[in-house]
Length: 154
Image 1 (cartoon, rainbow, N blue to C red):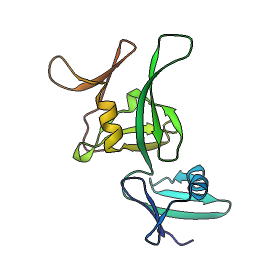
Image 2: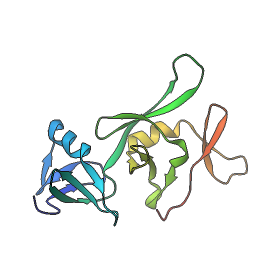
Image 3: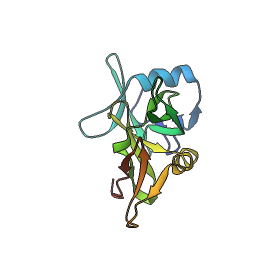
Image 4: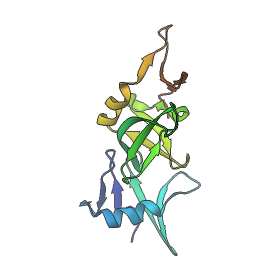
């Protein structure tokens, strides 16, 4: 594979030489072998082969958000479903606003950034509150406020 034959667009759709890649089994292998090099570039490592990707924004996209309860207690958590079909607990302290007011978080144990889709953004917005002083926004979860980093330069 030559470098940049594979592209991931801002909505998390994969393309090979312009053709949409939709086979879940192939994408699953690519996601499992996805890495970021020391310069911040995305690549797939399969054995001795390395293939750099053109990633428009992030390789992972948050497709859905839901609030759940931990079994056996009253603690709530927010779960996200990612573009690789995995489900994980949202790392609340990683929420931040990027360019063009796009919401991001960290996923895969903090290894990757993920962009919220429009749908998932609206789902999370149900839980977002504005600070009393009118400056900033947060999610109140288990009586703790998790403020959204407003840094738009990320």
